[in-house]
Length: 148
Image 1 (cartoon, rainbow, N blue to C red):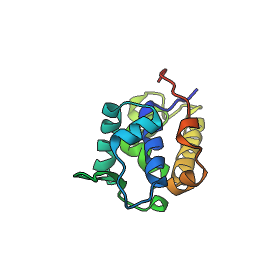
Image 2 (cartoon, rainbow, N blue to C red):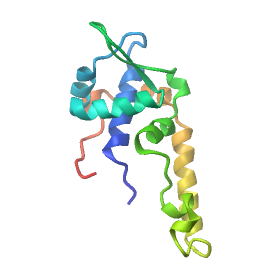
Image 3 (cartoon, helix red, strand yellow):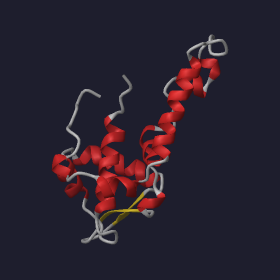
């Protein structure tokens, strides 16, 4: 079964929380970590990658914290996953046909391509605003799974 890492899952949860905030008021990293139930150190790593991708911005000072760098309607879930996980296909041969000597004659490759396209379509067809409108409260959201 295909599983997403905690990077993508936790990063998406943090981004949803930012999208649900008042917009102009920065949220402290510690508050996001506490609300979402993961460490500040791990969240810092995620927020750094999201900042580097231009999806969040940090505000320094006494009233500092993190904000979305763009309108939630302009941020696709795929943008978040690409920033945190890197752009990658479900199987290496889709990105690099030379990674497998059988890629040109592989009967299953079409299935992997269709699966990859379906995933990309869902991630790029869903905005952060879509999720923020329908997200459960933080204490009831996705359970922590340390298996990935």
